[in-house]
Length: 309
Image (tube, rainbow, N blue to C red; front, side, top):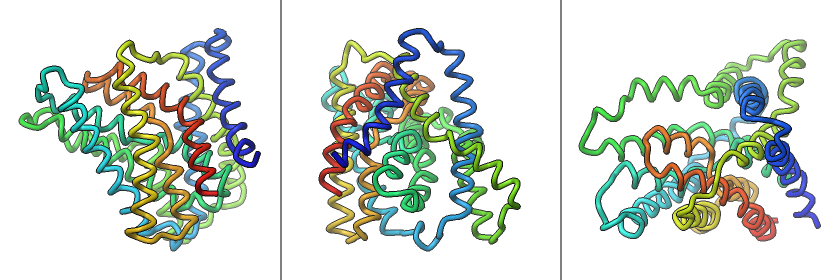
């Protein structure tokens, strides 16, 4: 019942967003507007406020970083090998395609799903460690995907363009600004802090609603097998490896380990689909993986929460 109480409100909001779009109460334009408010205003306010107030000594941990990213890079590599030797027709080398499938197998929807799950199950004070993980997540995996895709053709990747897009990403930018305020010991004056707090309050609910609404626009591909394989790698293999590495290699504190496992158990992030459309590889697979992994994450989160709590 405790686990049900944690998961139900989150599922309810996602299902509400999905239902509102399926019933045509909202259309793509409405959701686009709500998405802009969520990702450019409300979530950045939430992240900036929390990052500026957290205890940095608790949030920065090399062992926690390695416990998360060694498994992530390992699963990324497993995804590449599966696409190369199992999914590719006649085992042809297509580095762009292999890199995108590796991304599908390892990229977590931490902002929309991971943070709400961590807050609901472990408490708001435990999101400090999540910010360190989120800061490098997109930068590392997107760069790796583009670099693998550019193998043999350096013109397909521009560090300056990529660096600019990452620095100006509202999630990275808000966490970075919050970190600077925290390091400098700057306290926002009361009226500004209260205003940001009001903007931050709907962030989690809006993020979950937008996630559900977006699921109504994606379809599980006719070739659903690759989407299912990516989903299983993402929400079962990855958190299992994080748990093993964090427990037996780096011997992390239980609470920190719980945060990392729940973040890694998050479904495939929507941004991975956007990368697939940009590279023009595995678009149908990524769309299917976003939907499938989100649906299956109800089962996976129930399993991991029962195991951890």
